[in-house]
Length: 233
Image 1 (cartoon, rainbow, N blue to C red):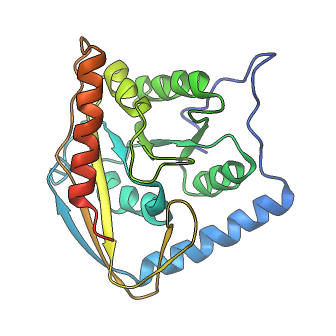
Image 2: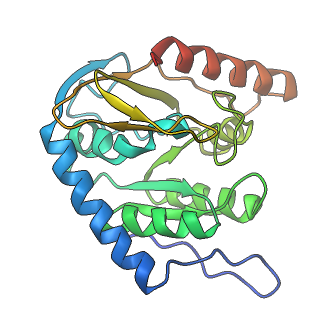
Image 3: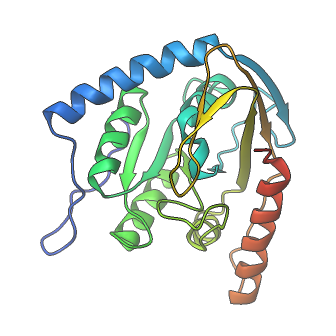
């Protein structure tokens, strides 16, 4: 985990996220190693409609990527966004469940801060921690349809996050030439080694601080439209 930002410790009476146990930490290290090997074998192709083609940009953002494309998300950041400056750091929203504990440990091995929470567990504290991370200069990453779906249906939390932090939402997706698709609720995608991976960063969405409930819903629908325009299963 980054030494520059750590979420505040929970106070008494709140839900404490489940941490990975020793076997989970071991599994996380194995997963991280295999993920690095897999990512190094892919044939990457990039299209950017945001502002990250400018390697000198200091603009921070909230990256929104569908839950079923989590397998490569950290590599999208490190290979394309982090090149815009050595000081860039990423904080990602991760479920407070036991599975989330494993994912948080994997992210930690990639120097990503895992902030634990979801719409059903620890939502308000997680939102506060994400806002705090943004104030410390972190980019943020969320899966707008996670952790339980429905698939490809954004929850409103990401819109509230953008409104509070005044960071733009950058929709991100990719298409794999060869992949395994799991029989999970999100149809989780795992790339087959040496596959082509076409990555697209979409146009940013800004949510003004003065936006009302109707405007937030319009922004949520716009996010879905832009993400779906980038998504090819």
